[in-house]
Amino acid sequence: MLKRADNPYWNTGAYNQSLAFLPDVVVLMLGTNDAKRNNWGPGGRDLAAQFPGDYAAMLASFAALPSKPKIHIMVPPPLYYDGCYGMNQTVINSVFPLEVPAIARANGLTAPPIDLFTLFQGECPVVGGTPGHPNNATDVYCDWVGSGGRDGCHPDNTGYGKVAQTVQAALLADEQR
Image (cartoon, helix red, strand yellow):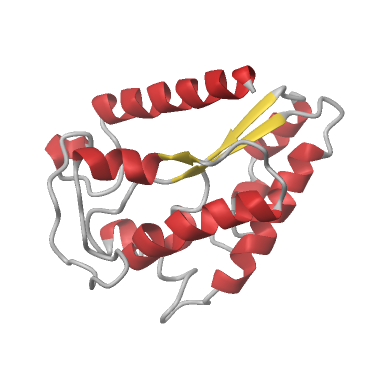
């Protein structure tokens, strides 16, 4: 999501192709890689203050399309240990669950964010990096996460299936509105 991050989505062929496709529906879950320490301090470039504005710009780029797509954003799943893939657990487990809904409201999205954080917390709770809890440096097992539950970040086939079911339910609920 961050424009100045390493390898930002903004500079990918996938982003340009998604705009050219003129979608009717857009589902965005970006930001997890932005939580890498080299992007989101301490010790990095600390681009945190740019996140809401860059997110708003991404939303505006899709909203401006002639197809006028319905836009949905997602709160990413938790990070199960600090430093996993270089990411800051506090950003993913404390900041994003609050900031993504605030971004949705601030940008006039009518559908609430699709909350994968709460979904995964219901199956595999982790307190590290959540409000009032320090980050944990050891992995927390989750049967919806890859590498036999020890990847710390990426869902496995079961987890991705749960993500797909949750997105489908949100899209169907949105059609009912």
